[in-house]
Length: 364
Image (cartoon, rainbow, N blue to C red; front, side, top):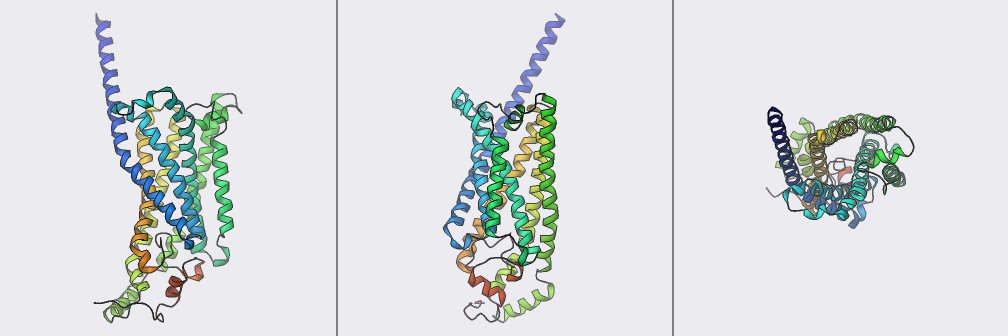
């Protein structure tokens, strides 16, 4: 009798844990739905902006476009994965229980998700390095367009070759299964995967920690000092302030702030990704649900910060300042001395805003 009572108690505990897991799955599915929709359309809109303008062929915009393409694949694959695994508990996606969609998710969506995630992280590192070369170094040392294109091709090739081998016969975690054919024991596979993830994480973190502070230092040094701000306010009252100077007053601080935000979110997402990979390899998947949710939240926030900020700047400032996507990556307060490629009209304004005769004065 006592054994039956203990068995019933354990069965009730299992039901409670199962119900709580279902509730967590429902929250995850509902929480990520608006992020996925906004992230998908904002990245597609960003790609459309970059493709439709000839002024967007600079290395910085090519890097941003590559990041947007990776984010599109990441959002689409993560949508299938979220609603295929977590959304089934809502009784709205029973179609994912069919064998065809299970094979589709395991064999195609998961490798695409991991590949897009790696490309996205490496693209952010490339953007950081390109901005570091353009802003914090001389114009001679900046990356050219052909260099950026070759690096992007290398990023895609490395990411695909690391994830997609033996995808047809792989399990739910392609990076592990693709290495199983080379090494026999399971322990050495785990050790090799953890070492590879740690190496990639350390490489990204070292690059970002090296480049971002130098970029911030340059931007802050080129910011408007209190004395310059006072002079600009005086000229503002005298209606002798050009459009570029108006723009610099409003956007100077936001450039530095957006660099700080993207720096923090990228470091957090990389850190969470590394620890999640280690926890999934060493433990089971259920113990990593909370960590996965936190990591993807940071990743989605970073993706939205990059994808939404640029179209907003484009909509509000393109017609006024003739320079689309003039924003966080340092194009607004740039000059030829720092090797940034900007539109001719905006470049003339920045070189000498005082002699420009075609700018309109403020109507106060």
